[in-house]
Length: 112
Length: 444
Image (cartoon, rainbow over all chains, first blue to last red; front, side):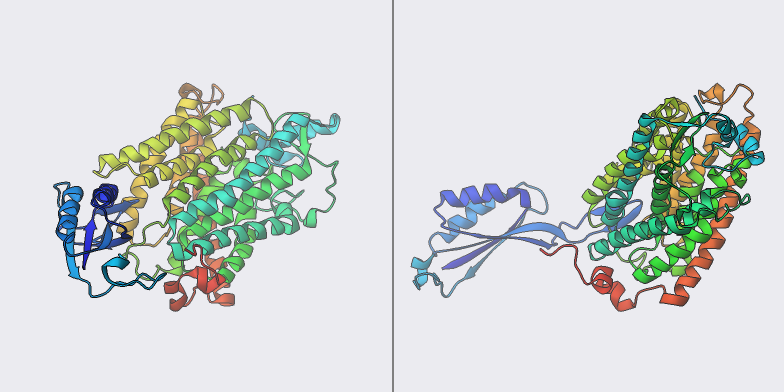
């Protein structure tokens, strides 16, 4: 099993969710996060006082899927989240050693 | 009709000292007992409540939104509490100090201590001969002015001043600063009134007074920890926006209510409170654009308030187009005061009580001496002497600045002596909501 973790622009969430749903992904976890990469923060000005915020708001999506599906999840996410501008985000793929469905106790891919 | 305070003041100095600016007819009133008009009374009761709405929740939300989220409740609670305290002090000794019978140019007599002698049948004169409003309504209307003025001062000292210190400060400041200046401006035997200073709804007594006191208090109290290095962005401009709207609507009670009657003078104050404010809201954003910033929501809100402040003394003393220019000028100057002058001088007027109310109040008070001219569409008489009027206006402004500064120094030092004035570093960093009130504004 793989964990596909994608950091994307907040307004791309719906596109990515739709793309992944059409692949048959059964679930995902979404969090609001902040961070920075090459895209630096923006400057805010309040009554002339300038604050540069170096953390940019992003959405983090976490999807666990079986090994075969992982490349297509990555591909679909990359395509859906792409706006062509700096700050579109990153996708990470991690190995997952176990999964358990809490209600039934099922384990492994059947728990997904 | 338009009331000419100049003539009134001169005559008033000779005669009976009654209430805000009606003395000339107070003498006539003894001949024919003034009648109370139900329409006037209803309007003045409404105006009084509109001014209350400016404080809670108007000013509380406006200021609260500008603070950091850890100090939201502290800001709102301080405003509400000093306003309540002001109401009680007002009926105990405030009203008589400002509007009691007798006294001198600086303070009234103490005959109405604890509202002695006032009954439902007591009348307060208006600006029209033979027309009065119930004195209790006048007491309440003026009570809300005292309450909002002391709350305005807090804008510079929030996020670091102890709640107990705020309460002690309010007690002393109202007594030695607000009541005497209110008397000087509005009572028939008051000093500025006698000079013939034009101040329709309290540009000197409310805004210059509050703004200058706020600056002095902030200078003595010192900067917030981390200012200006750390970001201290407003935590909710949505709240500030709601507060701005409530202030604007409430301000019609403040300005048009200051006519004391539901008449043409109130109508003039009303239209000016619309157009000066509209002009100021837009011109602040234009000023932002001119220096290369984006037109901002906070700029819009700040402009609205700057316009309201500036039009306060001019409300019934200007034509609508004079008011538009006055709003624009005040807005642009206030923009530079808060965004350029303040950082340059380095004082921490946290929410710009001085930059908006102090500076805007001065522009308004001095500008009133210009826009009053009949040649500029103002309601002045044909023989209006602008040069002389400007000298009088500036004299009132300077006297207010000096009086407010000295009184604030005394009030702050008494508060310091009794309470320590400033919260501990630990409380300041954790936020005054938890440290001073044991609550959080947002539990999410």
